[in-house]
Length: 451
Image (tube, rainbow, N blue to C red; front, top):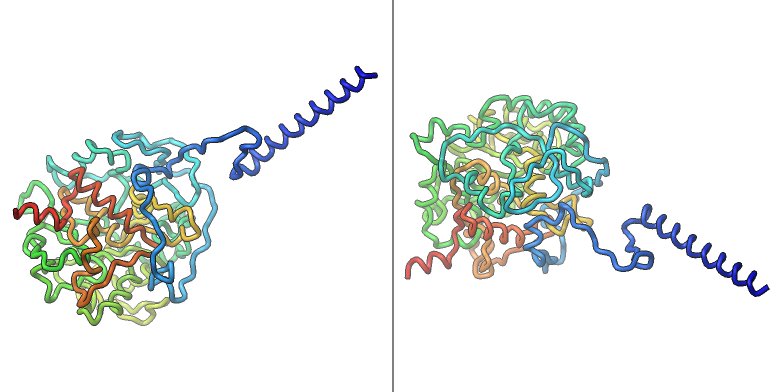
């Protein structure tokens, strides 16, 4: 009898352990987001492509702003946040990245990822020939830095007529905002992008052959609006570059001595341009700079960007949306042509977000409105197209010493909002400067040189 009881107890114990084992296996397969320490002991979360070098060196770069709202003013007035698509990444002629190892030129083809679908570290690839044979170009230097693993030289910076196809629309429609074509009707895309059908529309620096004067290297000045430029006396130096990039509320009149007077490329989204015209009107901003050499580079945040682009090219009024009935010539001049209008490719913006500015915000409910700031997109676009880049008016570690903008009449501290990660951007500018990939204007360097 005692033997029977022991056998029964052993069978019961074995059965219980078997039930626990299968229960743990079920939880592991179906509830993988729950730590299964009770089943397998301590676990270590596997690394993924989200842990890029930028994030690893930037563990404490995000904190919620001191403002009462986590949304910036341009997103606090009736903006509808897009629902996040959960469609898996398609198989296309693109390349995919899994892990980014600094210091190595990884072959990014045919690699599998386990990242969230909205990340989409998969991009259109094109053969993009450099416009110069500059021996000291950023492209040649970046291969020798720890940032080389993040740099893709063949992601198109701009989108144009040849990019809009049903297949590409299906692929990009899964990404919202500036990172794709989510919510944009195919008809609108065709009508807009089909008029961008010349070489000037896919080349950011389309007039280099005429402008170069046999220069070996393309030198670009990228000018932000930071208060560090006040009393900098950098105007002539800025204007001496082949190209001068500006963005948003770029007020020039009265500040030429500090910021220069030329503008070859003005980067904006329709939203940021309209808000700049409203918010900085008293400071003197009446609209985008206008000159014969100025190109207008749209950062397409919404469908309204495509509608304004189409109206500008066709010299008609905007058909619908917030700008319905408005005349684009008011912003870009009466003689604006399709050759002077350009639009960033959503793959390029998503690539910048994923490879260079992978913020912790992407793990929050605000992931769909987060993107690199307009100034960051502009600076990184220059990094991918120019041979040598000098950056002025961008945030530096001593930013608290300066007002938000160089044209502020009274001191305004920099505001931090959830849709951009300005601290991460500041860290990236320092990394690029220290790696010799850009020359970043900083007051402390000026003072040390004067001593």
